[in-house]
Length: 256
Length: 312
Ligand SMILES: Nc1ncnc2c1ncn2[C@@H]1O[C@H](COP(=O)(O)OP(=O)(O)OP(=O)(O)O)[C@@H](O)[C@H]1O
Ligand SMILES: [Mg+2]
Image (cartoon, helix red, strand yellow):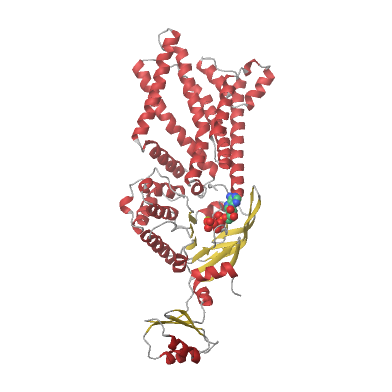
């Protein structure tokens, strides 16, 4: 397992930094976006930057970006590898495809988070702002990440069968935006509890908001965050395993 | 040792069903090279992919060293190496060495062993100096050699090659062929498909011909070539045969034909080993270039088998 992790880590690092120009330009983009958030927040609130408001904006944006990457990465990589002819070789290694692709998803997020953390920390130092970050908030963040991977596996399942991921991903991401913005909390309590267990991210985002605004969140949101993670992750794994079985039957793992 | 038993595959397409493979069985022993030949769409790639577990068969089974591909998948995959048709089999942004290390460690070879194995293989295909080039900067032939190295990182006992020399120039083809021979000498069981019948003839110990998803001919290359060779002689003259000499020859031997200005053909009666000497006596002392007995090549066998079916 360690060797699998290391192999994927090396591949991910090499593929990300092979072309320094690409790396630099994507770092620059990240920097500009976050700088915009840091300074923009001051402008809008007319108060010196810092405090809870900025934390919500920056953290919220960073998490949104991470979730989008986590849901999309696997699907894109399967589509590309099917076209480039490496997918079949991946299916030939003596590891189960779910394991390989989950490890890849994990490495892709590391490669995504590291530059982002670097940029945010650099901006924190430059602007001398103190982000009001709670370490406990890592729990709902990780739960949301796991949920996103579950969704990512489902998108990857679609990619395995149809080799076309763009449209599906648009729909999924639009759905997520809706889910996060929709005022489910206004529903009748029973409905809302059911919804937040089934619909991805809802409970986790609420918990995160609570934690960042220093309320510890009630027990049931914790439960619902966990159940939601378990549910979506299981759904993702099952659909991926099912799709790779169907692809094997139809002979479309490659690019027939 | 590879055993393939009764593979069957039907594909559902828009216009109906395609019987891609209809009950194909064969085995490849350690150190043996089996050439899998057939026209486009005969079912070669489908068979190879079923053998590698990339396509799930409707029926039949695959065994490597006695282990079943379905029930002991990872153990079997650990013994198989494959270079698939047309696909690139490699990451283009990684260097040659990075690719070999990646695929080696993914196949459970330790990093250190993968390193020495990579250099050993690159040395064999003469690409040591390109170890640090990215794959996208290599020529087609070099890429194919690296893909072959990639499939060998874990010392597979069974190697599957789908059209390994397609689109390669003479030099590159020779390199691949040399490597294939070395591997078979060291005990690897090799199954290869190709449309280049000369390559198949040069490399293979055995040949299997497939058409419409069914094996129609299978046997050792030597026996097949022998069987399809005719008891027929060509007598080739240094200058075009003079008409009167052809007439004399015809008078002596009924079954002589002039097939080209400088070639006479003799088909003797069964067991008449004396016929060729009588004919040569009749032609004496005309200057000859060559006298040869007909020797079939795989191209001839292939053509005949595909158009008229296999000999009984
Ligand atoms: N995934 C698939 N879905 C539907 N039909 C398929 C699929 N794969 C192969 N076929 C069909 O099965 C038949 C056998 O194809 P296959 O690729 O095995 O032939 P082949 O012998 O490798 O041919 P070639 O020499 O052109 O490579 C063909 O009729 C092909 O169209
Ligand atoms: Mg083929």
